[in-house]
Image (cartoon, rainbow, N blue to C red):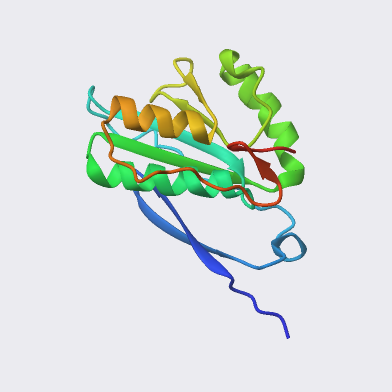
Length: 163
């Protein structure tokens, strides 16, 4: 007997919340699993809006932790928007190459997650991985986090998930 739903993931953007359920072994059920929730071009953003983008592969514990942190941060300030783009691990190598061309300062970053800031393409600023995002959130937003030292899963070491 297959257990189809293992847990729900919440991805938020400025248009609302989506719940996505995935299988313990989602690759066999979903040949292409990319959840892309970027901002709609029809959405008017206040000039004080700060946009964060979190991209990574879905079974990376640091990607999931960054997504949760982004959701908490967004809930504290209406001027903060967070988009999440989740990929299958085997597609991450191709996606990271695309991100390197979109965000030139990210060229040395090859792990999951990759986090960047900016509301307009062409003006994106590279933040880094999960640890860099935690540091930014603490310093820039004065967000009070518990001792947030995320322990990685078996694929993750020192704040990043390697491909």
